[in-house]
Length: 99
Image (tube, one colour):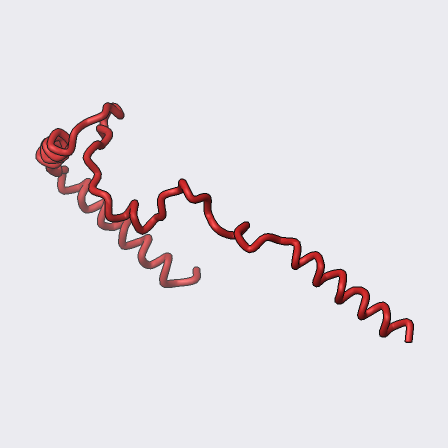
C-alpha cells in the first residue's frame, strides 16, 4: 500500500513539475532572424583575406582574382619534386600497411 502511494505521489510530483515548464521556453526569441532567412541573404560586404579590411563585393572579387593570378605554382628542382613524390608515396604506404 505504501509503495502504491509513494509511486502515485512521485507521479503527481513529476507531472506538476513538467506542467510548470512553459511550452515557449524551447522557442527562440521573436527578434532573432531564422537561419533559413540568413542563408538566402546576399552578402554585399566582405573582409580582405590579407589584412581584414572591409571590402565591397566587387573589390573582394578583384582581390581574389589578383591572388589567384599571383599564386601560380613555381617550378621546383627535379630532385625536390622527386623527394616530394617519394614522401607522399611513403605516407600512402604507411596508411595502407600497419607496420
